Image 1 (cartoon, rainbow, N blue to C red):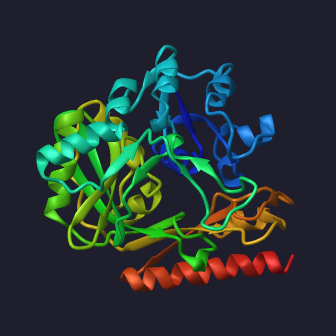
Image 2 (cartoon, rainbow, N blue to C red; image 1 turned 90 degrees about the vertical axis):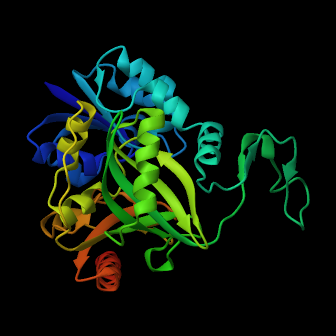
Image 3 (cartoon, one colour; image 1 turned 120 degrees about the vertical axis):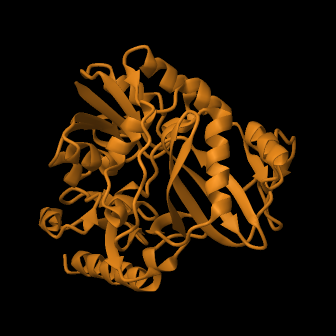
Amino acid sequence: MRYLLVGLSTRGIAESAVRAGKDVVTVDYFGDLDQEQICEGISLRREYDVGLDFNPFLFLKAASDLRFDFLVYVAPLENYPEILGKFAEKCVVVGNGAEVVKRVRDWRNVCRFCKDEGILFPKTVDGLEYVVKPKKSGGGVGIRRLSKYVVQKFVRGEHFSASFLGDGENGEMISMNEQLIGRREFGARKFWYCGNITPVFVDKEVDEICEKFVEEFGLKGSCGIDFVVNDGLYLMEVNPRPQATLEIVERAFGINIFLLHENAVKGELEEIGNPKRTWGKAILYAEEDVTMPDTCEWLDCGWIKDIPHLFERILKSEPICTVIADGSDRDDCFEHLVRRTESVRAKMKNF
């Protein structure tokens, strides 16, 4: 039996699946060098010469000639239930199906549910027939129609996520994770996601929220929620698929997310033990256009992930790679991440 892994970047879930002894093939955008070492795959970037704004239906086209029996998806497929529906006509979707995804990714449904359950959710509207433009503008530069966007009240605070399992009726908490957002140390801009540190704390309220979402929406497999903490806990988003945190959660708890995900979809929830150490990941972004050195050497270090290809051209603001690191606590782990990203920058400067 063969598993097709689909998403913007499938390297993390591919490593987990291969460790679980699965036969996998991938369709993702990046097609990174380290992923090529462990499984077959198609890179949309290389196969179709597209940028990050590619049409997501390209996932279907790229997979059309592949042989596979099961589908496991990661971001951003949760935003395209119609694509999941098309895949479901060809194989078994190991995860939440199109109808579940459609419900839980509609902010109106989430907002109504949060209101009924007393969960804080930022004021959100869409379909506004307004335009937004710079205070000092000319010639129409920078003007955008708000009707194309969801407008949400900005909530100041610290950013976190929770990782949990669902069997459609019951939930099992795995971990609470700090989200690294807009950190200059990693070349990220203000609202950019650039990594996580796990675990950070245990909160019964978050555990209960995850349980409620499993019950209400029938969530299955490895899922997550994003939230902001200030004077209260504000739910921001529900992610009905394995999160980007999976590789550090696996290391922190000594588990295999792919197996836990598959078993949960089958209705088998497993209790998660205590963490063994703090782990983190950081996405390093390019602060200028850069040509990569001989990145084959990076394969041996073990802590550089999502490795670009030899002489690959990375444009300003695009992700270069991911680094992972551990530590005795949160601060020690973060400092370790910073040192390792500086080491990667040094490798590129020496080229």
